[in-house]
Image (tube, rainbow over all chains, first blue to last red; front, side, top):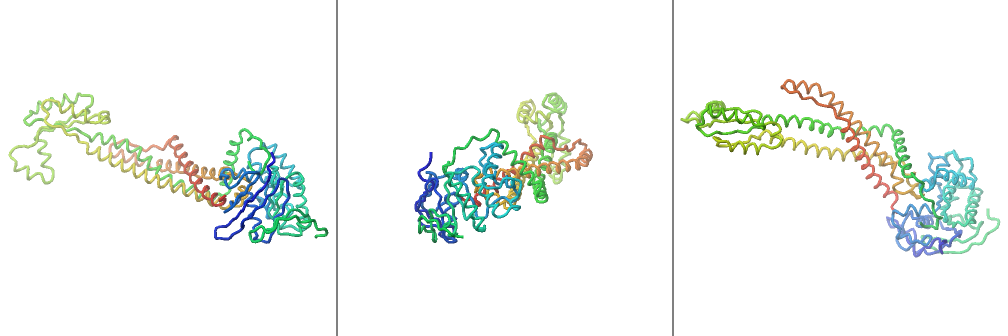
Length: 234
Length: 316
């Protein structure tokens, strides 16, 4: 059954040890199947927000609800299952360099431990085909370009077919053409019904695509608006 | 399950065993890859285990021998009534010597006792001033090893009921001294063993912690992707187990080598004292027990290190 909201934040705050306040009283709701950008300058709290949703961090105040389940009461032993149910993409890719592309993409399935070797093979190949990397299974990440590495990261994030995809500056290290290509992949997953939350500090990327945008400034949500598509943005 | 994820298929059968096998082999490969660091740890563990193990072997083998020796020195002194004639004393000695619990009986006449006492320093002069011989006739009863093992009290009571017996004294000094010495040795071994076992576990834990530091990013990625603590720590626990097991095997070899090197000189020494004692190399069961202890210590050391490190890496 589809939950009424995929993500809900109620007065969420996060203060790191040392006193730095990354988020203050942030509240919003993201429905199932939505595509939402989170934007703001560096240090505005975008990454922290995504970390709270993925439960890589816990908020110091407020409540985060994902797929109808409040994360503040989630015991430590259930955290891995929550993370496995989400697809996560990072700016720096975070691929394991000594493993092949195939092994990197298969990792979430191995961690879940629910699939046979045959199923894993099938899912990994399908995911790599979707990101245009069929035939690169045996390559090591170091043998790939930045864009290809990012696509491996995306394949790894979607191989277990999550309903929520979180991307933290996924195009930060890429040239505009490659960034556009990667965004195209996100849009394809969004069209397939996946809820997508993309954190980016690149306004041109948002203007080119348009859509709902959450703007953070010094840890506060200062705007939640629909940005129109602007033609001719490079 | 959160994030509205699709229902998951059930775990394939035998997955748990396969994961353990894979973690076990991965740990072995990692250890083989880091030869020098692994070897150093194995040697430190081996030395830490070899010392108490060697003492244990020595203690277990010499305790039996020493107890036998103590048995020979444990006697019951039977003081007969003054004035008992030598013939009557000898007859009583023969009667007692026939008992099943008795190995031998020696008769010590008052005259012999006086002569013996005069030989002792400081007693000659006081004894000279006495007009009469103060020593009663004496029977020294040596019990059989079986009687000694059962305890000398029943035999002493039975001897005390014999006619003409005035007093009975059980000479257990040697046995008590030896038992006390063995108890001290056992305690020392226990303390030393515990301290060195803790040291071995800590050494393994430290090695595993360093390995863990080197694979920090890999662990972080696994945790980000939803790897459970059990999944992440499993290869490191096996690494600890391998280190402990290999250390124990080397310790066994060291102890066996030491026993082999000492066996001939010890046998020669025993022969010079009229004995036939020889050190035996530790057996297979003993080696298996040591291997089990080593593996357990390695596992425990790794578990402590991994648990603390993982909590630091992923506080959520």
